[in-house]
Amino acid sequence: MRTKIFTLALLAVAPASGSGQINTAAASDTTNDKGGVSAAEWTAMLKAAKPGSTIDLDSRKVAFARYRGLSNVTIKGGVFGVIVLDQWKNVTFSGTRFEPRDGDNPAGSLVVAYQPDGLKFDCTSFTGAMNADGQLGFASISVRGGNNVSVTRSTFSNIGNYLSFLRTTNVQVTDNSFSYIREGVDLVGTRNVVVARNSFGPFRPAPRDHADGIQFFTAGLTLPTDTAAQNVLIENNLVDPGAGYRAQGIFLRDEAGLAASGRGYSDITIRNNVLIGTGWHGIAAGDPVQRLLIENNRLLIRRNANDPVTNNWILVKSGGATVRDNTAGTFTLGKGVIAKNNKVLARVATSAEIASANAQLAAWKGVATASRCPG
Image (tube, helix red, strand yellow):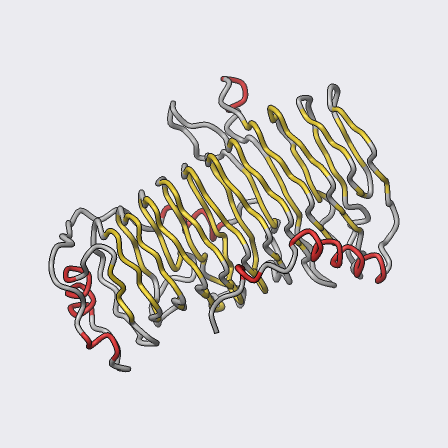
């Protein structure tokens, strides 16, 4: 479920109105200097970057300045605080670090991207900081609209996280590691999405959080053209909040009631995921989904001291779904749901069963050398 930090991060920054031209010579050799990059130097680099060029920042800290419309550039390395990207097209961040600076707002996002097209984060790292309440602060990436956005082979640690996509099409979140976070991935009105081969956990939610590995919601989708998420594949992920902590697994609600006007969830596949200690809602679709497939997932129960959660279930409240070949604490399935070959494991999982589930996940993922970053 959403929390205050996500709401603030979603609304905190407005698009800029400036413009930028990408039509001059390549960036100068000063990008190899170990000193910091001033805002003026950064802007000059962007203006000078030719299409297809790489700005190599090495490990330099960058004083970011907003710049509209950067295109066809790779930004290699560099260390950034909070940044806002306005209509960037075919831009890749490779090996870049994002970490808060003094004065950055822990209720906001390290990266806010407005209407990007072809934006990639590959082998990047995101690190947060504690907020005034002593809880993990900072969301990682907030994408508003746009098309063709990918987050791959990256790490997110000691951060609120809330990796979110709002009205974005063609999204890829693959081969990432999320550890010591409050929330995983949030999908709001997205289309054509793949979330695969990621590990979520350990979690460190704040006392009033309802943390999720992957969450779908429609709250705030008020445009007449809005739809709930459609054509989404979630596979080969691990969600494990860690002993002594709790997070839900994959959670779906239609707060805006879009299904009533034919704009609800559709074509969502959730398969081959391992969810450990993610009760009560291991996988929960609390509102209608057209063509929902929940297949070959393993949900295991872990009990924490002084925690009332005793289950890790699969819940589908209405029809239009197929639920097959899963293991879970219980199955609560509405009328019209097709169920086949599901196994109830209603007790606390043994350490051997948890190890086996993780081994199965490794088999599903395979040994993908392509998922390893250079160095």
